[in-house]
Image (cartoon, rainbow, N blue to C red):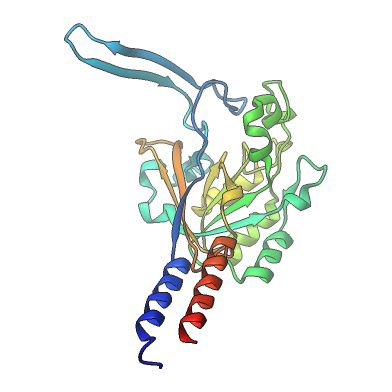
Length: 285
């Protein structure tokens, strides 16, 4: 009886492993287009069509010109942005821009505090549930700000319609939490779904001044963190390679390994596993 059903068992075992071993690719980047929020210091993003149509030479051509500051859209802050003599954008080692993904969800902590500062206790709370932040991590702090306000225009996302940085409102990282990470964990990158690593009401930028001199890269305006699990991903932050740049728009994405992610045992996977087990039992009877 056992020998008769070995092929069935082998096939179903392969199906189960395949079910658990699926990888997914998720985009954590907002699309650059006119009207997106920009920090008050910087000019608006501008996109101009140069060619779009049939040309005199008998061919079709599209080309465009763009004008923007380095720190526009989903972008990287290089250490030189706040630290004289530190890495400029093209000096950042490529390996420093990829690592195990950590998504820390602080939406419940924010409540009505639009300038909530993520604390050391918030970071340690994640560790109590999921384990120590891995070495070389790329941390993504999910405040829910981008999900809620990015598509509603600059005033909603920035917390003010005025081009005055002192009037902004959005969550960020508490300087004590930034210092705790520098002193106690090896983190390559921290990403924010807000306009800044610092809270909107900050005009001295303490988180920037702590993280960047210690070569912890900052990503601002990260998108779609609702699709990222707390663990089990590898994140890639790929900026335009601007010589001497202090930052650059970046394509940020994550590869999710469902075998190791906290969300790996999704409902479809469980259904397939249960169905496979039932089939196996039926075949063995």
